[in-house]
Amino acid sequence: METVYGQPEAVAYLRRVAEGTLKLPLLLSGPSGVGRRFSVAETAKQVFGVEQQLALSGGHHPDYRVVEVEDDKDIKVEAVRDLIDETRSLPSWAPVKFFVIDGVDRLTIAAANALLKVLEERPQKARFFLLAEQSEAVIPTIRSRCAVVRYRRLPERFVLEKLLEITEDEMKAQVCARVGEGSLGRATRCFVAGQLAVRDEARAVLEHASRKDLFAVFSAVDEVADLPLALTFMGQLLHDVLVVRVAPGRVVHLDTLDALGTLSSVLTSEHVHQLLADLRLVRERARAPVNLAFHVKSALASACV
Amino acid sequence: MYLLERELRRARRWPNRNVVCLDGVDVTEVGIVEAMGDSSLDDGDGTVVVVDNAEQVKLSGCLAEYAAQRDVGDRSSVLVAICREAQLSKGWSSVAERGKAIPLLKLKPWETAKIKARVLAECESLGVGLDDAAFDVLFLLHAEQTANILNEIRKAVFLVDGSTVTKEAVLAVCGKRHDVAPWAVSEAAFAKEPKRALRALSLLVQDRGEEVLVPVVAALMRQLETFLVLRHLLDRRASPEAMGTALGIHPYRVQKDLPAVKKHSAVQLLSQMKKLCELEAMVKGAAIGKRTRVELVVLSLAA
Picture (tube, rainbow over the protein chains, first blue to last red):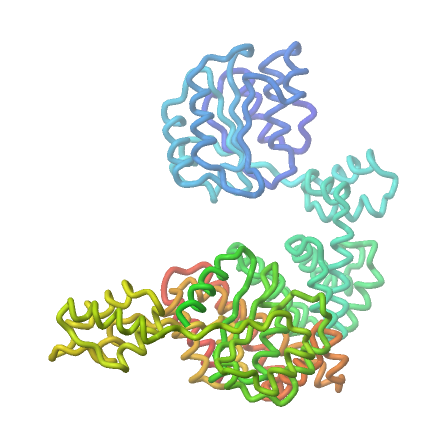
């Protein structure tokens, strides 16, 4: 448990699970990438014993079962039924079975009802760990049967240290750490998947908008490789435009200070706030299968016309 | 007509093939050029534009010019013109020649008299008569399919007082078919022709149900985006050629769109863009009132 960093409340709960004094299902809520699954795996190592650690690390331990969101689709009832079938049998190697559902806020209604039934009549040798980004998004009937454990965002210093273990580019690591907003997973993804290239595309779109070049804005939006991600970056960059005037050291995208300065000299605060509000609306509408490019263009066109 | 309808129904089932049917009575030469050049209609393997009663279209040479400019190997859009005349007019000959059209199908006329005699004989066995106008309508709809013709007559019998089936009775029992494409709504709306826009929308919904509202909204969005960019470039005094290059469309189409673009200001288009965003989210997310919402936006565009 010493390896779980910055989550004292969660560690206290998980220690009790490891000691066998807490058998309730745990609802682990918090942003992704702050160590929720990692801490459950660490607990399993402690409960299962040293000789089983290799199988656990390899992800093929017979008594450690994970159900998760795949391809950003909700978890269906079939997946939950498979899990329920497994709860009926005794553990084959470890003293208890661990069942992890990563994305309990993404269960379909049928899946949630199926899970509820097994949570009400828990088998003696089963331990449930339900992971959600926000506990409020989990249906109340499931939430009320769990002990809710909140995970905090990790300190930026810690995330930066971890990133510097894989790179020597301190500036890039610093930017990725800030993009991660306290999530080591998100920061690592930003660094490894080269998401800063999408950030540069988003910045180019905003620069065209600041020059009121509508045609260039539309063309640039059409060329963005990952529009939902670019939308997030646009929001961050606009926040930076507001911050760079008063506290340049606190901007997220430190490596683009010059560009942010130029944007801040062209765009007024009212413009930036309006754009932020419009982009927030686009993000809300993007939950339905809308033409995202058109919506982004619509939000940016206001700055050009 | 019957055979054409049947072939078009088959053509619509081709995967990724978009079939646009136009009637020469309603469509202009410019409309045909636009349908040919509108890549937004193309879902994959290209567009087939069918113009029935093509001899009715007044040709001034634009279509021939357009056909001449296209690459011979370009099959992204194909024009099928149905000329109901014994001989091709000068205009269409020129289009065929300059566009290097391949087969000129000459279809044999139907042996109407034989079919009519067969139908009348069947009518006698049903104990009813059939007037000439009613037969013409039935023949237009079903051609040599006498079984279908007789089915329509059986239904029409209930609507006539005497023993002769009339044209009015036949029309009342036969379902009408309309071929309108979603872009017809957006074209009329942006040309500020509210009646035509609403009529096209009404025909579409009648023909294909409320599911058609999604492609209608998509067509409105595409058209609006094009118009907004054209308006922006127009305000910057760009030439039609430059606009065409920027948008990747033929300068002729830019020229054709510009009068309609000039009817809208950039601010108006921007406000409509926001409305369309709202509309799209609603059409794809909400359960009720979709048609009314689409009608309201179409009207606000056209008004």
